Image (cartoon, rainbow, N blue to C red; front, side, top):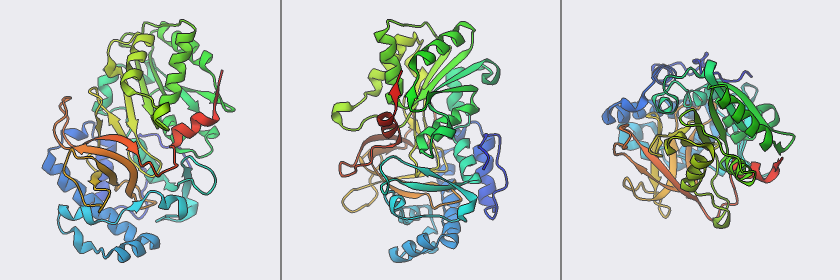
Length: 389
């Protein structure tokens, strides 16, 4: 299977209805998703999720049985309020079942962390991967607040603190972070289980000296390791506005090992000599979710308008009002190869007000994992298996 480039969709096989053509135009051609009025976003999600539910009911026997057992029918989707009734798989079901809506030979398998028997296994075909890549498309307005008018293809350098996809063994965060290759020329700095910090520092300094825009991307734990290495060796840079730091993955395994995003931003500003804390951004995704949520300059994670976020009361799974914490759940129509209708194991909140950055739509804040879960997340599992040098 070829690697998504973000340049645009290839054939989506049987999923070629009007709604999916609309979805692909939005993902691959629209540079400012969040300018869409709120009412239009609501109507869009209703159309797209309804089409996706119809597809997966037809093509996934497991999802069809699950929906029938839930008493759900397509008549429940006669209006947007019915989206809350769409059956959602608990994400742990991906640890127990092979959930697909297309043939296995059309897919690659991506894994979360954990030992054998406890990993989520998600089957993605090429259209699903391309849409995921499209949600990270560097032409988007939310990214341009980082690098302005710089041509990243010619003047950018990506420093990826992780393994290349060929060494990732299907672990999702490793693969996801390699999609930074869409931005600019990229080097990866985990090889044979070793994070080569000295090489990363050297190459960052060289690229800045050459006048290039540098983006350091990786799990928060690896960015923290790089910053500690630089502090231990009394290394500071003066990047100004010629640098960005992008993190993706888990922030804590437990309270004793928690990384604080504000502290990491402050340390990155001081160590790299950044002009603004807005140059440090986080991206939220998990192996079962097929869209990335990107942090804006005010550090709020924006949900693209095609994803329905429903925060649920953990006791009865009823939807809770905006701003009230609960279990996060998602209806994501971008996945063709599996039903991406998920009840996650994270507690968080969703807001529907206009962000201080001026973008409308939904923003999310992920607070913590369920304490009953032993699943640490791909980034933290990666940190447990990689040494530094």
